[in-house]
Image (cartoon, rainbow, N blue to C red; front, side, top):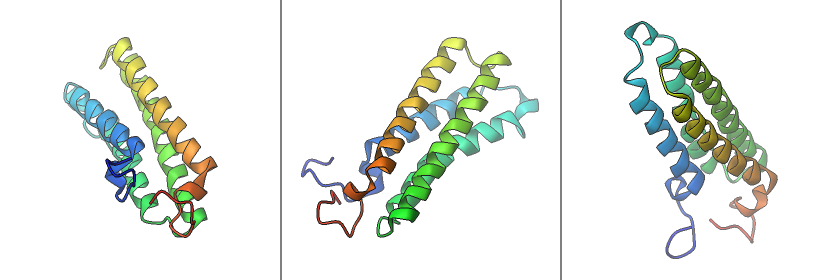
Length: 134
């Protein structure tokens, strides 16, 4: 929440901030991937990790409709799971260390937990709900 206790923009959400941080960490690590991975692993991990935060921001703008909001959060959760798979490949190919892989995997587990919690309690976030935070 903001200093006033009211979230008005998607970039104020903890889950959004965490997803951007994790995506940027992956971006920095992917700079060291071999050139031959540019159009495969590097591209895929970049796309999926960035999609996590993009789906969150899209969902935030669809808070008038519970189904649309939850669908975007579910898309974000799916992209986070895909990113974990690409992280596994990066570790197995020795492009990142096992420690870096575990830390990133844990970050995406945390992100997915927050997304699931939001999907299980969407009424708190919806615009047309009198109890909404936004």
